[in-house]
Length: 402
Figure 1 (tube, rainbow, N blue to C red):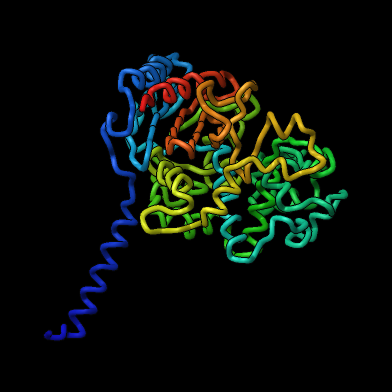
Figure 2: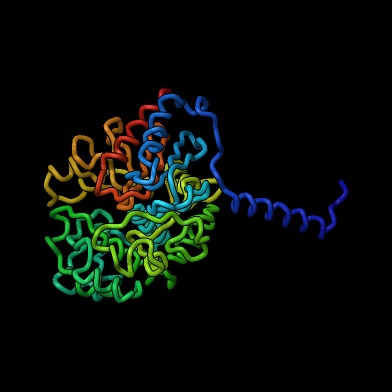
């Protein structure tokens, strides 16, 4: 057999590498027809029609939104509704719109930290003070890293001077230092559950200390870029401003210089709520989790890590009340569905379903048993009508008939 010239073999290898790189750069889940993934289109139209109704007209309660559903590694094309912002004269929403994911940011930060667990850099069973010595202030010495992942740390949701720091346009590092030194626990770690954004911030601080990179850069380099998620960032740096959906804001942010639509907040890159993404981009991360940590030839986590993240870990805490463990289950960063409680995401979703919601009107859920998932993104304050997302969720879940 005639040997191939060295330069030709190199060219072939470089060409193949370029092809793989291009594939990753343009990563998108395959688009399927509804019947191929067991969806009844008439039933799914119920969800589409609901969001269309809520986003229609100048006085629409929901400025804009999008729905994307997927199953078995394939998706239906996302559908977009409403306007690009809450202003009455806002332009129609773009089909490449980017949404402020709000608290759906949190499990992505925990995902990054789990990567460090796998690399032998971080132990969940360690005290937080091993990584952040100043965290010992105010009697937090016994808090374990795993308590930060499961909202059992006793940390407050926000800093006491949260609003003032935002008015002063404080940098993220100032928030991190305050979360470590100034927070006072509401209860001994591992004895109760209280949702806490500051726990996520401390985990982001740990990631930065262990890697020497900002949390924004680490997410971009280690998760978003390898997966080809070109429309996802912690903070808006690198994203086209015209694509970003403007959201409704709570009363305390009105007439301020730090609201969710402000240049300051968008650039801050808050680890507890500052990620921007598109429905198609976030679908990739959903599939990574359903695949046990990999997609498109890129493995980010092991199946063992994904299982720990997406199953109830509250049974691991002996001092946590049984009622809490049973009715408010959490994985490592991801929340488990909790049917029978006001915070449930839907009446048709089982306890094996995991996901998260965001204050800006966002919801994502994934079912590892059926390989189904839904990405429901809006720009309406969730606190004003949390039932809207539940209605959409019910309609989407009911559309899967096979």
